[in-house]
Length: 266
Image (cartoon, rainbow, N blue to C red; front, side, top):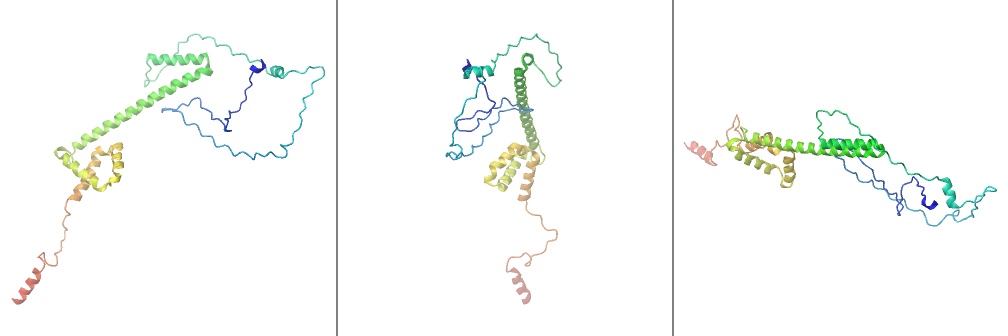
């Protein structure tokens, strides 16, 4: 019977390679976001083993003598001594079922709890009352599931709002007095021409990602900015307020010299 008894040591398991085996976390709970198991931290490599040659002291072996037994007391076998030192471990008794409880609580107005969800909550409460050491896991699992459900619904709502915002910007651009209306296609052609002129081809994928992620490609203010650039680039420069005449008075080359010679002859 002594062979059936195992005494566990509170030391981490060691793999055959000499490295400590990583401990696995039991659970992780996030607040306000979906929780996911993290990667197990890497165990640093074991230090190089010392030289295989034993030291001088290690080479000296002594003969161990058994401990003397008190007079008159018979020598106990190894198994009997271990049995006497460690009493037998009795299994824990099964917890008795508790009487049902009508849980009373008030939910905030912003939280709705359907009947099937309420049944799961009450089952977790009952499990905790029956055995708190094990029932706590049911409460943690239920909380993690609800937080994941909340994170998913929040992300879906954010995507919906962003898409509706972009649609509103696009409608406003098509109805704008400067670039919208019947000349919207012409305006967009000029805008695209400025984009192709000032955005290098190698940077075009990143520029398109910027337009898509921010929604700037639909915003009327950004489109009007490029349209103003196109108009300033295409229109001829305004004449100077104080123009000076050219040296030849605007005549073709040689005409001024001809008029000078003619005037001298006259």
